[in-house]
Image (cartoon, rainbow, N blue to C red):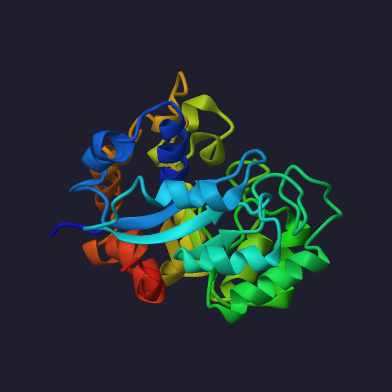
Length: 292
């Protein structure tokens, strides 16, 4: 049985755009497609916003540089710092985007990320943005929000909530990881928690950034959330050209995903349980948002 895989977080849109600025218009076909083909069935392909730029034209360009044919793709936004007005959200929706995070790590007009002030949460404009996302049935992603913004959102809505690439603070005290109290609140919202293979979110100890320690996060997440609410957002960063992998040595990029699937099998999970977490938990809930 070939296990199907849906990756709930990859920065492909951002990468193809930044590559195009360097003159490479074939980044998707030459780099991403060979890794994805036969390994990853789909994912949330996001545009990452680490700094200020004019969002709408950038998104339009990035969409011309990818080919979603053969993949179950949902278009997403990792942060909305560059959203100039709520009105622009309709234009972004019309481009096909069905997923968004209010922030990356920063504080912005709409909410506060993990690097922002702890006592600052979702703003008035942020609640207007949430109203748009709720009324348009969009996926609301809480990864990168600080705790106040996280709870502000969940006190406002339980609709279409995910954390696309976060791990557990219990095993790694990183500010991007979630407390068990946050996991219980996600469970109450029937949200999806998508665990990630980013090494610094698995362990603070370099020698423990591996699959064995990632398994601790998986088992605890299942214990709290239930297996039907656990997914994976791998957040592979090989294409950012870091001198050392930001993921883990055993699974450094999308082409090595079978190493992870085999590990899950060897750890005692059944094929049905694995495919729930790697594909169907997410796909069955949000397949209506897949690019046609």
